[in-house]
Image (cartoon, rainbow, N blue to C red):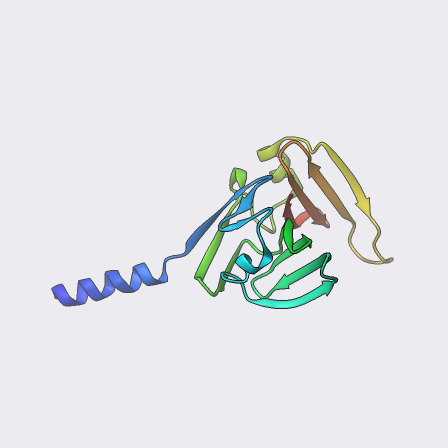
Amino acid sequence: MRKFLLTLSLAAAASASTVWRVVPGSSVGPIQLGQSYLQANQVLTPAQARGTATAAYLDYAEGVGLECQNQRITQIVLHRTSFSGKVGPVVIQLPGNLAIGCSVAQMQSALGPATTSRALPVAKGYPAQIYYAYTKLGLGARSEGGKIVEFAVW
């Protein structure tokens, strides 16, 4: 019985998610603004790169995007707030317990009104998209049809 309980507790610990805390204007878990994208490659799975060596956008299989200037991270974009990747299961912890899929009203309740917001161009028949910037925090969010579909740390 004791061996069974030990095995069960080890299995539960192994399946536990790692929490990556979002610090607006600074970092998402181990990924920090200003660091080399090569450091992010240690914890994320590269999927696609666009741009040049001086200005690039890197997509990762885990639903994270990095904007880079001279191979340094200038913006971290989150398309998911939970994923499984190189480091196992990860849960992204945003301020106010926000997550991808929350409503704009929930975001504004947690963070207050955005410093600025603007409608983004969309093709006819597609839901409205709005970008919200919290400039003093270094945090942005894009909504589609009233739901948050991405967060950005800059």
